[in-house]
Amino acid sequence: MRTIFITGASGGFGEAIARNLSQQNCKLILTARNEEKLLKVCEDITKNTHSQVLPLIFDVQDSAACEKAIHAIPEAFKQIDVLINNAGLAVELDPIHKGSFEDWERMINTNVKGLLYVTRLISPQMVERKSGHIINIGSISSREVYCGGGVYCATKHAVLALSQAMRSDFLPYNIKVTQVSPGAADTNFSTVRFHGDKARADKVYEGYDPLVAEDVAQIVEFILSRPPHVCINEIIFTPTAQFNGAIHRQ
Ligand code: NDP
Ligand code: 8X3
Image 1 (cartoon, rainbow, N blue to C red):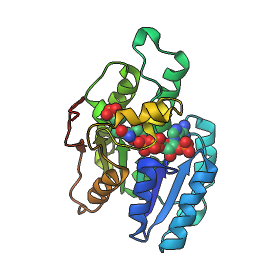
Image 2 (cartoon, protein in one colour):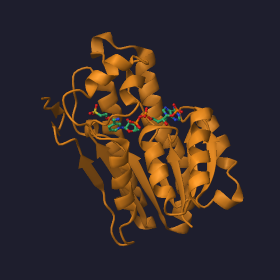
Image 3 (cartoon, rainbow, N blue to C red):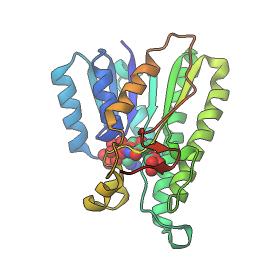
């Protein structure tokens, strides 16, 4: 039974990936900060599938909390075969001259440093076993930039650099590294970006069909179903109405 560790599984892509992969009877380690939401996902999976689930509540921005949570993983879940670095966020849509240091720090600390902390703590056992798969959730923003998205896009460009560096570092150890780079998807992402302003968030998805979390889950399912000799390095996919940063609205 494969053990799969997913960060940011209390909603959005992480939850959809967990629910999708749980159909294959695996051991899932699901993490997030919101205990109530995460436990609900875990309970549903336990009730409806034969997968085993371990919830871990911690903030990926906090290196000591990452260490404490990961070191305390019980023996039955300790051998991690797949790490999915998904936890991430955007905060606001400010041009650089109006941006807030606090918002910038949250994005950089979550999207870049959080991904690094978790990978640093989990990858040594993959290196030792000479097997494993790391999937980093990047974005179309790993390759494009848009007005007001400077720091978010910079963090996702950094994720792409790290995915490529990991692929290179882990090449001698038979560890696959894949970056998944989706375009606009209707999750809680924009509501978080706009501090809970749902009306403003809904406008982001008006006039076209955005991706939904299950689209991302199906891509991850495909990536993980390739045979051992095939590593997908990156998949970029967008709503049909989006090319690079531009969205065509009806
Ligand atoms: P959601 O806001 O729906 O989900 C984000 C998840 O990340 C939640 O489970 C949240 O859980 C978790 N999370 C956020 N901050 C932290 C933290 N500091 N520590 C631990 N967990 C955290 O967004 P999406 O599902 O859309 O986003 C998932 C990933 O996909 C992100 O990396 C995002 O940048 C990327 N992405 C999103 C796109 C989109 O258009 N939606 C497109 C391309 C990429 P909790 O709050 O409980 O901690
Ligand atoms: C978030 C999606 O379209 O704002 O990564 O780049 S988008």
